[in-house]
Image 1 (cartoon, rainbow, N blue to C red):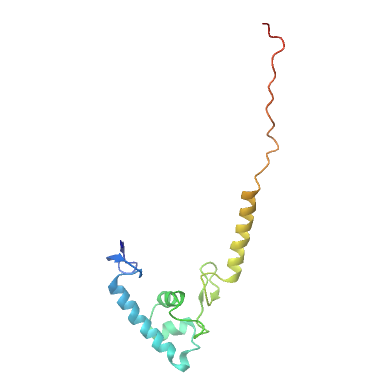
Image 2: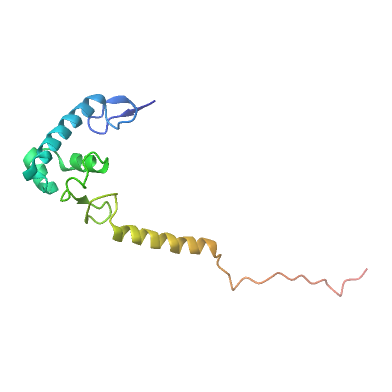
Length: 137
C-alpha cells in the first residue's frame, strides 16, 4: 500500500482500491445512495445530468465519477450523458466521443508512419577520400 493525499480533503491515507480517504469514501457512498434512490423512481429514469444535480444537490463531478465507474449504468438511465474529456460533447460511455477517438487514431497512424519511414536527406552526400598522387616516397 502507498500513502497518498485524499483528492477531496487532502488527508493522508493508505491508498488501496479507492482513490479517496475512508471518510470521503463514506460521504461518496451516501451521495451515491441519494442519486441512485432518485434515479430508481420511474418518473426520474429519463432525467438528464443537470436535472439529477438540481434535484439531489450532489455535485456533477461526483455523478460523472459514478457513471465512469459504471456504478450508474447508462443502459438503465439512457438520458444520463456526461461530457467528452476532449470536446465536451455528451457521451454515454468511455472517456472520449467517437469523433475525438477517430482524430487521435488518425494522428497516431500519421506519427507511426513518420517513425517507420526515416527521412532521406538529399543534401547529405557520401564521403570520398583521395590519395595524394604527388606524394613522394
